[in-house]
Length: 217
Ligand code: DX5
Ligand code: ZN
Figure 1: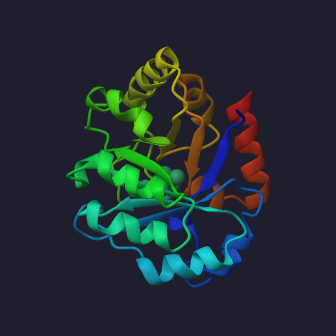
Figure 2: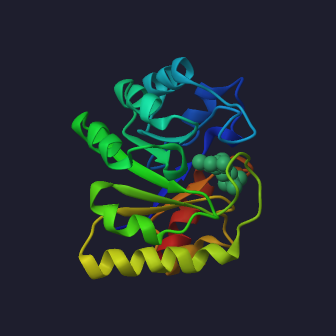
Figure 3: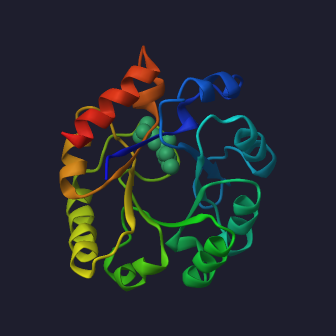
């Protein structure tokens, strides 16, 4: 499967969201970071804004919930038109029940791990999920540098999926750029979130193409 490039609108201009969504029409999904100032020390946007993004975006929505009480809120994001909803393992009481609820609505279900959370306890549950998100920075802010120590976690997840014949995607979020994406792809990820690398580029569309080529090389 070719690499998927999902620009994060956390690095877009929130006063010009429609313009900045049109700028990434060459992307596979738009990554929408929802933060509640509790699960992470930052606050971004919520249901009404994500609903409008879904209405105007040229590409499907990959919603990343960095919020407490995912069991309550994730279904609401599924209902408003997101193609994929990812919640944190650390913020749910019943991950499998929630994944099944999302899938029953026709939405891809993702589960995310903070850098300090081990992947081993999740491996047996991966068939219940369409995507595993390995955070490669502490969640909360764009523009941080990639945590190299996360590469073995990605490799272990890839090895377990390959051994079991699983088709769950592995997404990486945090510090993805031209100088890191090749190593991350080699480790076994196939979906790449990039915020500052894409929106900080002089030519946003060309950067998406360049990142995809580097991941597929
Ligand atoms: C951070 C967010 C990321 C963020 C990545 O908590 O989940 O999606 O936008 O930003 P970069 O690509 O700049 O590291
Ligand atoms: Zn994110």
